Image (cartoon, rainbow, N blue to C red):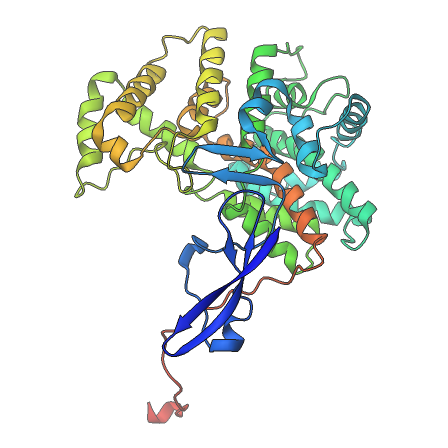
Length: 429
């Protein structure tokens, strides 16, 4: 990182501010001393022009449609790597050697079981609870079961907590699903890989064997890779903010799960699938396109456009191919939902309205169809997102904790309430 200076002028007053330049991407103005020198704060709702931290993990260029994990293009990782290799990369900064990969896989696999009393914890929740509510509660509850990995000042405890969260999240997610449908919990098996284990815990029952489908396993692994991290998004920023107070890692990840639950964030693929179901057939598309173009109509095409990407979401291209592979494997290549999706994509990439507004299909557009084909209900979509994103949350949390310049998060505000006024006794009001 290099640093220069820039000048901020306000009336007849000028102050110098450091300008910092990273490896790639826009430079930033360090306004840490702005208030002390000018008596003013900046105003940036949604933090759309504010860098909240310095990070070496993930880089996005929304204009060019680029996503890098530790410098590696997402396309290469999704094509050539697997999810646990991606987790290792995010956590440690480098791709593992064969020995490191084997050791990491072993440690994650041996941490997949949860404390047996967790089953009784689930029994205290209503059977019809949303799986995300169950996941949020159970992740937070991990801190009550694993006291030996909550000291954030101890590097070894931080690493054990990191491994436990990545390993146990799919187990908790599967338990949340099983509890919602009234089926018995399935224990993890150490002879299965991460995604095969998860699919088995979700869909197996004790009375019959579960057959692993390598196509579905690879598809889920790729989905997890694509969702593993995405720079300083809402849930990641939430994890960092919670962690800045010194909260234990289980509480921080539970906070991330809660934030991810929002339909504008983790629930977007569910909304996209619901939209495709509403459209129903290719013949109905023109009507919905017209509604999307009508500024007086509240209808929005879900799964198009992105807060960051102003080009084609690089993850969407991989997800499109994965979607076709799953549908072909399951004999659903003529699925009406896919027909609607393909026609919508064709229109979005050729219609001047969508091109001008850069409303390109994003990852949520295809992931919902894929997950539905694999047998997951809508209520589980965001849960799966949380399983994948845990690795990114943990990497970001670990980076923040180990940053010597880290401070507790404390945004400022533009106050527009009542000015100072004196209290009056109730009889005088």
